[in-house]
Length: 123
Image 1 (cartoon, rainbow, N blue to C red):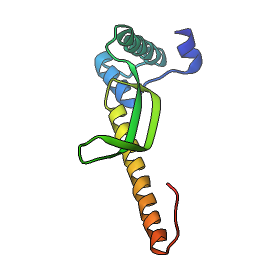
Image 2: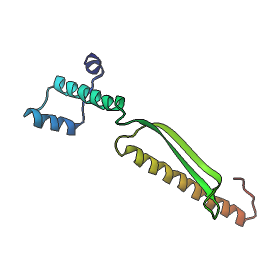
Image 3: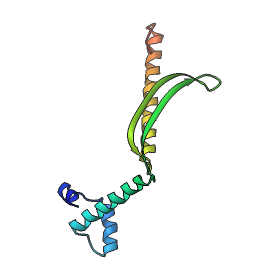
Image 4: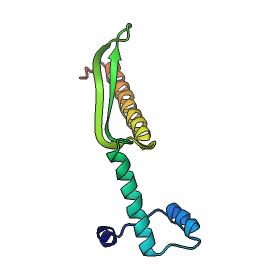
């Protein structure tokens, strides 16, 4: 509790509203901090019990042949520290994949532009 008080822990307004419903009144600052500590403890207890885990997102864009075998990797990205619980990691995976695809499409368009003008580009 001392660290939470010192660091000014709190909760989202939605969580405070839920706590107010439970208490029948708005929580005090101390009750909000205590609830934040309890929430954090429960969240990390779940991690200790393998109910969720940290993970690495690795996304690759590959060229494949007609048999579906990977011929070469065109682009890849890996970022760690995502929590398996919830949907955030899925949102980030899609955002990263879309960003990578957009970049590859832009590169293809630029390559075609220069090839039409007889300029050789590198991959």
